Image (cartoon, rainbow, N blue to C red):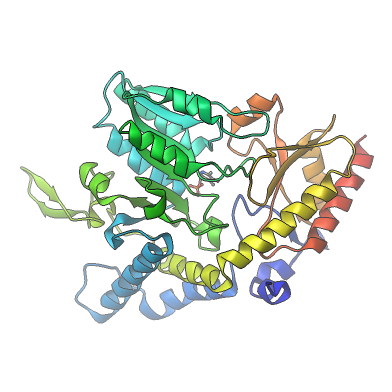
Length: 403
Ligand SMILES: *Cc1c(COP(=O)(O)O)cnc(C)c1O
């Protein structure tokens, strides 16, 4: 069992008041809060070792480079990548996905097909649409059912030798549904397609094993897993990263530059042009250490408890409907009959409760359910049963005020 009060004490913001009320933070799907150890590590970097990396002979540059590369190896072990050069630092999931779609622009041909799921975040739809527009490839969409689950029979039927890439999230941000990615990867590989997994919502809840999944790419953001904003990771299998052209040209990513021809640096530097978010990259390693110290089994156990309690309590409210009822992570997307999600969100905000309202960057899901949006409460390991009860009472109060 987790010592929740002890964990909460690690997060200074959790003892803040918002609108005069103790903060109840249930917008973890948008970004997580940061423990003091992460906040301190950012200052420590600038106070003690700030220097540019991979270029100086001087001591500070060496110290900063070592810290950055140690963080890369830490993340390599965390996701069980085979090599540390398969772990690319990015500014977040969006950057990682765009790096891959940019690379595929030189690989796809008219008539090729890209398969996306109907459960995707806009970040994992729009770059693929842009890629299809550029190359003449066709975008195919895996449909979902009323439970918010992808329909696997339909997925199987979409795959053919024309399929070149499949892209799907590990866990849906809008509904919390956990997709059967291992099955999907195996099926895609059987027709020779590459697979990108958008792990943005998975990494706060579980420890992905990229070798076991056998995915070709796995993208995630640091800020949803207790790390700083502007950090992220793109894992890519070595053979794919060697095959794809660089994303950006600049310093750091070259072997030799002449005006006639430039040759590119080895992995991972080929994809890391310019001065990166050095502090962020180092501190993402601190965040990963922090999460592992708490332990993903304990996190899973606690979050399951929160999800079950919140589901049971919210369903006490008449006219409340939960979207996404399949196998899922600790996320609840809901609406109350006849009330706009925004109105509930605004009232409970006055009571210190932070939830997300709207389409959650996943408009196709809202269209599927014929709704403008939902109220999304997304729980983290530092949330408590008491906080859920506070939210349920606040939602009841808002409902009374609005009906
Ligand atoms: C948050 C999120 C993204 C985008 O992440 P950024 O950090 O904004 O780049 C992509 N996909 C999913 C599933 C997300 O939850």
